[in-house]
Image (tube, rainbow, N blue to C red):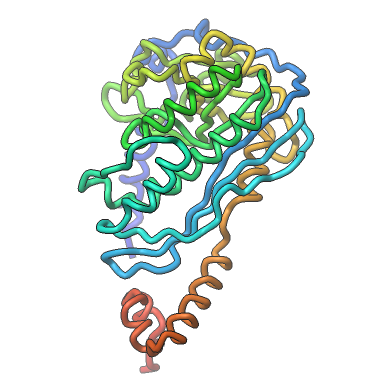
Length: 343
């Protein structure tokens, strides 16, 4: 068993990374002042709110490839009332680095009119993640088509690190939203953005704490442009990155990515967002995204059931159970299933 003194050393290192005992030091090192926390005025919004989300479960993995169940879609609200949930993709995806191109091309060319995708070697390890993101963009594109001018579209996640290899898809979606007068915001529950000259500190959590002292009890937004954080938020040329608290009674803050066409009306867009983020069920977080997650997520039970169905089909094709399990079952699972004999 690990010695308690060793745990104490590790705990001290973790505390040094995550705690913020000196707000003045935070302000000095980040270049953030009290005035940068701009109050948000929540507003009643009776238009449509679209919330896009996706889910991915690995059904089986045989080292050189994997089979994944992927689902994507969006929930639609009218003001604060749920209207419907639309599933735009619910199918299996074979992640094979030598045969993925056609699966991507069918979507890229057929829906977005873009040329096919060629991934770099380092990107091939994220094949299923990229395909899920592509299906989320299909849902996002469909939401823009269904939306009316002035409607609000929320995407579960950020946009900046996804510039490659699907950046052209995002840019096409943003242009369509700009032409239609629809606001798009990317909402991230967590973020790798950090601050600190001595160690890397979690920016999102520390900013929420600092704002609790500098701007207590009010919703606010903080633009990260020209702030001393890592990575540099100004490297994203597609828009601006914000941190926002959407309900003054909530301790949590979220990263918000706003495309260029939303920048001029960011306060109006965030006012709409704050107005639909006050549900007691998930206070401080957009209820439309909460509902989209619940309606679209794939459960472990679904994944397990699909695996059993797959094994049945393989058996009908003549493969023995030993062949199937030998190819698809991780040996770590075999070890875990072996019961230890009593001494």
